Amino acid sequence: MSLFLFLAFVALLSALGVVLAKNPVHSVLFLILTFFTLSAHYLMLNAQFLAAVNIIVYAGAIMVLFLFVIMFLNLNEDTEPHKPALAKIAATIAGGSLLLIMVAALHKVQPTGYNADTFDSQVGMVDRLGLVLFKQYSLPFELASILLLAAMVGSVMLGKRETGERNF
Image (tube, rainbow, N blue to C red):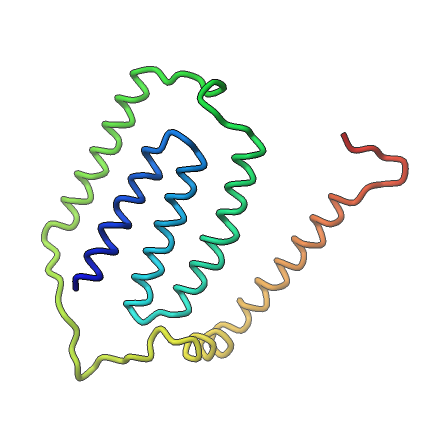
């Protein structure tokens, strides 16, 4: 229980760091820390595959993409336009109303423990996921692979230079 509370505390602090950081690179680093703490929560829930995918896909590939865009755009405080006070007030009201809606929706929730007689410890395992993926969802899996293949071919065709064409 104490590990869960520690990870939840770190996840909340790093999520606040994402929003409140002035430097976009620091914001991305806080987001990576948030992803790692969420992956630790997945490990505590016995969902090893989900934790590994979260680290590989989100903390790895997506964060590299975010850092590339941030470095490419060269964001800093000098180029960012000043936000009017009305926009800050509207954002505060929107965030407060979201908090109010979440508290109203969850105020009667009674968390319960698990029943040891019906608990299946193999739910988040990779072999179970593979069986479900390749037996029940084989057609959507293959359609997704064809879609990704078409996207890769399209990106290669768009990026291919014609003879005599110059890129700036």
